Image 1 (cartoon, rainbow, N blue to C red):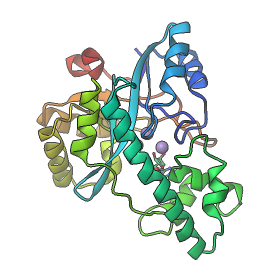
Image 2 (image 1 turned 60 degrees about the horizontal axis):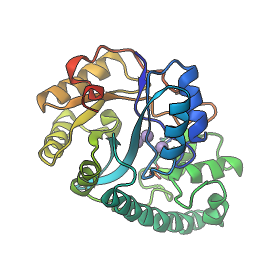
Image 3 (image 1 turned 45 degrees about the horizontal axis):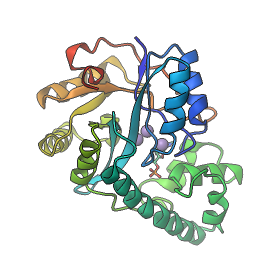
Image 4 (image 1 turned 45 degrees about the vertical axis):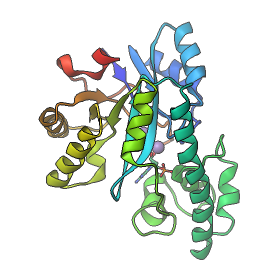
Length: 274
Ligand code: AMP
Ligand code: MN
Ligand code: MN
Ligand code: MN
């Protein structure tokens, strides 16, 4: 069974419309799809209508930016009710931070010699909520860099000018919004935080204490070793397993919708609980 529970449309930093994501999923032979835009449920209605028309099982999702102590993390909500007020109010809170950060990134890039970055980037986003990826796309368009990895490396991560820190909502708040809207809270791409095993276990154990339901154990590039590592942590803290490509549709990127290693998840697969 092909299951992809982590994808992005142009309602956050993806390229395709929700309708095109659904059509792509059908063409890829997906049995279950979730659209999980960053801090946004805007694409869910279109994706859900289109999925119904094409007989695809669709799960309402969202990927929420959160802060746990000083660590920025992403928590995917699966099976959320996109009309739930606490969830919508929460996303609004994160998106206000996102707008302010975009303006700050603009100022910071100006100091680094890139003028009017915020203004130039605004037109590249379908919504007013600009991600770092939009800034990266602007810099590629302006021929400041050649590709996404190089822009992120030179400008958008670590202590580089475009990596303006955000105090996203806390992990407690984010997990509560997801639960209040009827969803399950899943820690996205655990290995991407580059934590030592000790720190990763501390993070997961603290998140479990505040209600985390599961961990993404399979992404597009997961090796068998990666899967085993994530699964072991999930098992240690009695968490469910989830999976998703994190498809964005950017050109020259090898991530494909629905293309993740096939894996026999067994009883603890999150789909059994949605
Ligand atoms: P933001 O939520 O605005 O901070 O943007 C985060 C998004 O930037 C992630 O969801 C990724 O899609 C993208 N991103 C982060 N780091 C990288 C990287 N090194 N290369 C390419 N894209 C990245
Ligand atoms: Mn993204
Ligand atoms: Mn993410
Ligand atoms: Mn994602």
